[in-house]
Image: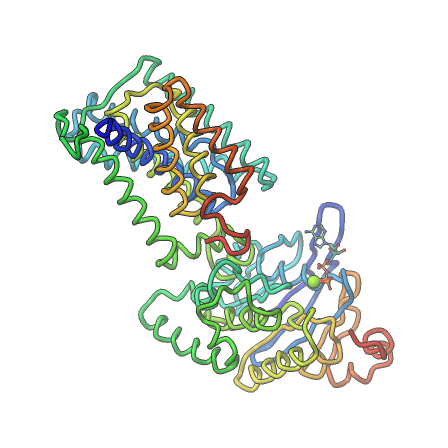
Length: 292
Length: 240
Ligand SMILES: Nc1ncnc2c1ncn2[C@@H]1O[C@H](COP(=O)(O)OP(=O)(O)OP(=O)(O)O)[C@@H](O)[C@H]1O
Ligand SMILES: [Mg+2]
């Protein structure tokens, strides 16, 4: 029992870390454009697919494959801002969010066309031999997932709190006109944020797909889970995204393990609804004007 | 320093600026007064590149700037303090000031930035004590000071102020106008948009009266203060 519990906690932390990474992607775009980017989940799939091609078509070794895949998806994110969001006549939130939904469908179509419908997998970074830890057996890949999430979190936290560009990005989200009057290139900032979101999405895919395998439409469900995690933590807050992700992952894993795995996906959304009822701003959510 | 010729701005079918001509020379304070909806904010936003001018030319320091992106115009040194202050409420006072100096990148510029910050904190000693507070919790007057300070820490050659006295208590208004004349004494060039005509005319060298998108009256401020038309329409007994 105790051993099982440790197992559930570790697997919950691993999926939680992935939800956190996706939530961080949502968070970045919120912190520049104040919109929900529904293509975030598809960035993850794209990252995995590029990685697949880099490894098996171009025969690159793992490190350059990762770097190139992340850059490729970052570029696609930037292109999405430049050639879709920026060209919108109306800058109303509803319109922009709708464009992200369109982009999501478009990306999924593209993936299906290029990589096909059959499920694919990626190799583990470092071996398949489970490690024994506190009575639980963990795949080394899980440690990569958790470590990768921590690294991305620390980098983003530093970016938004301690760099001028990060603060400028938040200023753009809060008031684009006032930001422009500071000499900030508002459009470039938005493009940068979509590129970052793309890169973070790709990292999530590259880390998790060795454990789960991938299909062209896996981004839909994972995107929703990541979105739920972001809302849970307090939408737009970097720390909240991580807390929300871990909480959701743990709840799912413990719920599935201790209650029934039939309800695994339901649990996420029940928790989300409960949070929205009880604390609409999320766990770390702040008042509109004081959000970081 | 700034020359505006035959400037037209439309919002859809609404003709908001109907051929505005004006100029500002180095070291001058020029006031623009006018009622609600006269087009004052539209004029400043056209100068800053925030709204598009359909016709006319804007020349700043010898460079045509109409059609340029806002951040490029700021880079040239035309900085606007927008109506309603629009400080970044979630950020701290010092972060707001940091963003004011956003364009300062080179080591020399950064060194200058420190000097400018000291100057701003000397102009507005109140801000010094609030540096690490969130800007959103400041009072209206403090927010206005922050908004002006934020524009002054940039490479500002011309400061455009949009109704800096709006919604502030008389005491604070006086303080803001004191700062404006102090800036003039220190050699600053200022374009001041105001509805508070009496104060604006007292502090400025020249003024333009904007009515329904056109310059209706212009001249030295001391003369406008005495002019009948201005007196009855803008300097009436009722003070805002
Ligand atoms: N974004 C906009 N879209 C459409 N019409 C606008 C817009 N902004 C201003 N207007 C209109 O343009 C005209 C000029 O407005 P503007 O804000 O420039 O006046 P103002 O002199 O600054 O007034 P106030 O003293 O109230 O600030 C008004 O009739 C206003 O309704
Ligand atoms: Mg106005």
